[in-house]
Length: 276
Image 1 (cartoon, rainbow, N blue to C red):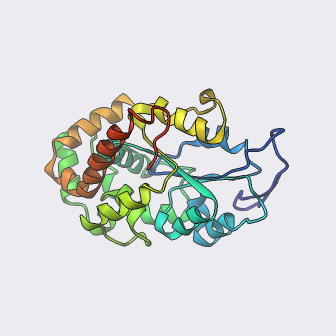
Image 2 (cartoon, rainbow, N blue to C red):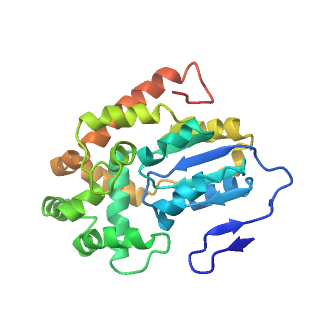
């Protein structure tokens, strides 16, 4: 293997398995906490693999997509997907594991509090700059106290709101991090999601595992998914009772509702694969 010494970016590697998977896969990451184990177990079956690609910036990400001479590629990252939609017409198949909007908000606030006190290795330099104001804002917030959460969300300045407001709709409907989302963007987000080869929810992880297994031909056991944590479930429950949290997640809640309804309709016909 050859890696860039400063960034850790993979430049070249010999195949780690006897038969690499002849597919180009993009796993869109929607959570602030990356699925590291999942990416490792999938990525080692491909000739080229790059995880959490957003750490390297837009230009490097584009170069990874443009590796035309390689037919076995695995890319994962928390990307603004509209900037890379064209590659779905150039051989890439996209997969995504979605989560409940309130749970993701709870996870984000938890990580921001932690970021205020310690370094988090999986955040790139750009992320650290964007997230720094939010980390400072939530540093002293009590996750066990509903009133503390409510006050923090209500007093959040725009730089903090940008980190929290409907992140999934933003990823699927916008092209720059500062771009705001409205209800009209929900349709745009759903339309782009309909082009994905596999989409699933973390509340039904086996369903997602089976669909990915069918797509790339690896057994379900090779796909370790992160468990949902009871502490974050409790924080999410508190957030559900807050009107300000509902307003911040409005577009993602609408998106979540319609996607779940569509998948529920498709499920009886496609027991192992979720298709658009």
